Length: 191
Image (tube, rainbow, N blue to C red):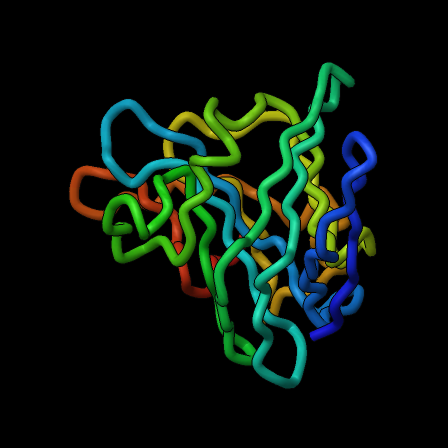
């Protein structure tokens, strides 16, 4: 993991450099594979799923997930502030839940980012996954389904695959009385 140092100068007072962790992640190592907004009829919540397409375990502490509204009206940044390892070929989910230090996370969520993101997901957005300003992956959506998830339907997922809108579809598979998507697991293929 690389470390960058930042120094803050305020009213002539210098502080110690505070390290900023930069995960050793390069373009295509992590892939955005699924997005789910909050549904009014369940408690599964809103989340984004990532897939480790690299050949080794990655710790994504320090990664940023940026939601940029397609209409240009703003963006919201999520920063992974805790160690969060993901095995090669593994999935993890970042969810709109309180941090685990505040409240236990549901089993399908690996990291809660409600402290960074206090509103629902934008209706149309580009998601940029970055490591210290370097783009690792990008995915876009024009709308999210009211039930189920917006899912990349290719296996194994790749950063090139998620650039093509034709590879994305709504996963509206019903499980019990909900449409949970496939958090922390491979997505269903698109029809």
